[in-house]
Length: 156
Image (tube, rainbow, N blue to C red; front, side, top):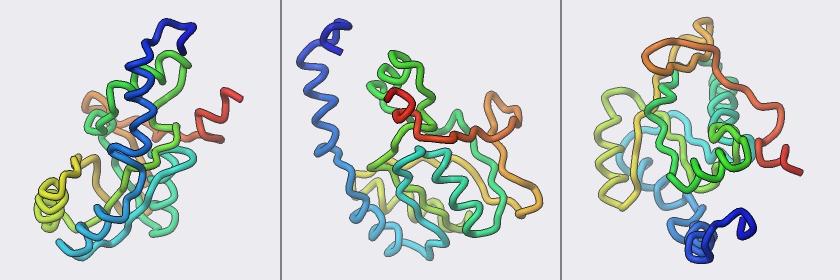
């Protein structure tokens, strides 16, 4: 990345994400559990968010509708994915936490987690299993992205 023109300051900041905000999801997971009944929870590591959501769907035997436009991606992550031609939905997502709660509990969980310093985005809803798993982009439904391997692994 240095050879590609990225500054030492930028690279140090990105490397620092390992510790700040960090990759542990224990505290936000506990906050969510204290705020409401959690139906499912997942730390989407290898395979990224898309694979983590597929795993939840399979384990719970439910369908999902995921608003891809609602998924926050750090600007630095967007830059690195563009640099290497990777889809951010398929790269390792350590430090992210997917929490599934009933619609009436969303605001309570969101408030508790944000009060604890953890940003929250509502990215989708649970469907009946026979409705499948879908992505929504620009208001249109499309097939949900699937990755055979973590996008970063493709680089090696």
